[in-house]
Image (cartoon, rainbow, N blue to C red; front, side, top):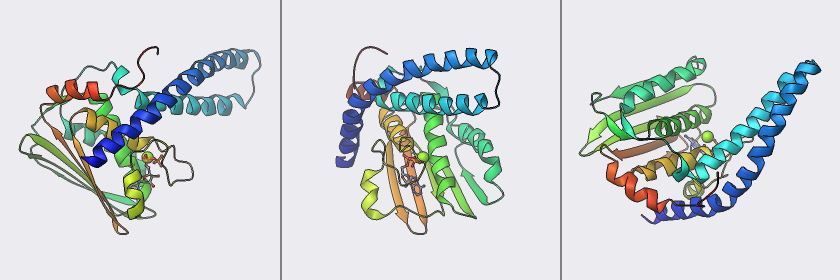
Length: 239
Ligand code: ADP
Ligand code: MG
């Protein structure tokens, strides 16, 4: 519970500041992109592809920051969907890694549908899977378990990767915390904010042999979504 509040507070504090900044940066970047696209038509060059894709990456990062900072402004409507079907679909995005990482799936209670913001949850699971693949240097294993426990759905993602040092565990979920050279440190912020918003819980176990994230989410999140919407109010207003 302490950790939960700590993460919520951190998300809120960083959210206040970064939402404003992200907003100020995203709009000019988007305008610049529009003009560059026009220039690209008038002045053909082999460099435009690089310029535009770098710009897209910057806009993407700012967009990501904005959605982590202001999840309550996300207008996605909750619906019923199959969590394990989404995981199954997401895995196909990692097919290029399958030659080095073997994925073991143990999916039980696959007929259960949960209620929540599907795209947001999908993105969170993508972020967790991406971290798992990135944690494995060379060959290794990722095992994913899906089952029902009481009124909750549980998803365990275990990797045989490098692990997380104990003194860094409490920093997980803090926006911009990253131990990677090219990481944004926003992936887990999105994960924590999404699962907390759905009234779920996240536990992390890690050792130098690997890491296990255990996510449990109420199958019926309707009430949780309503009450957490209130808890996660960051900067109100313009977007
Ligand atoms: P990023 O991936 O951009 O660095 P994240 O928020 O996704 O940012 O993760 C923050 C940090 O947490 C990572 O840089 C990494 O050090 C650590 N981490 C997250 N997941 C794992 C994992 N499965 N195994 C090892 N380290 C992890
Ligand atoms: Mg990540």
